[in-house]
Amino acid sequence: MLDDLAGRRTGERIQVLRERKGLSRPTLAGLVGKSASWLKGIENGRRLPPRLPTLVRLAEVLGVGDVALLAGTDMDIGDAASIPLTSFARIPHEAVPAIREAVRAPLLTVSGTAVDVAGLADRVAQAWRMWHGSPTPPHRRGPRPAHAHPGRSRRRPADRRRGAQDGQRRPRGPLRPRPA
Image (cartoon, rainbow, N blue to C red; front, top):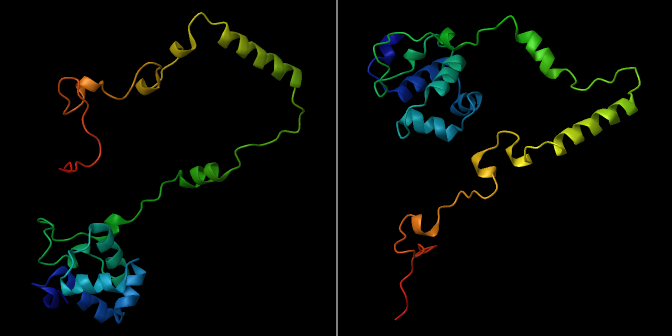
C-alpha cells in the first residue's frame, strides 16, 4: 500500500485512496464538507494541499489510521514518520456530562414561595440612596474603559494627525486631480 503512494503529491495520494475505497469525487468531497471541484483541484495539483483539520477529516473518511500517509511530497511534515489519527480524537472528561447538564438547565426557576414585595422595594430604595448619595461622582465610582470617560476622545487633535502639517487637516477621501 505504501509503495503505491511513495513519491506522490498529497492530491495524488488522496485520489489513489479514494479510488481504492470506491468513493466518487462528489461523495468524498461532501463527506468532508467541501465541493467536488475543490477536491478535483487538490487531486490535480491546481490547489494547495489541504490544511491539517481537513486532512484529518479526509483520513477519517478514507479509513486511514495515519494522517502522515496522506501528506505527500508537496507537504513538509518534518521528521514525523507517523501522525496517528487517534491523536486528534477528543478526549472525554469525566466532568463533561455535568457541565452539559448545567449549561442546558433552565436559568430561572420559580420557587413556590411568594416574593416579599415590600422588602424588595426597601432594598431597591436603599441601593438608590447609596448610589445617588455618594460623595464620589458617578463617573469615578468604578473602572470604565478609557474611551468611555467624558471629555476624552479617541481621535487625535488636528495638529497631531498623520500627514497634517502646520495645523492643516489631512484631505479625506480619494485624491483626485483638480480640473484645470
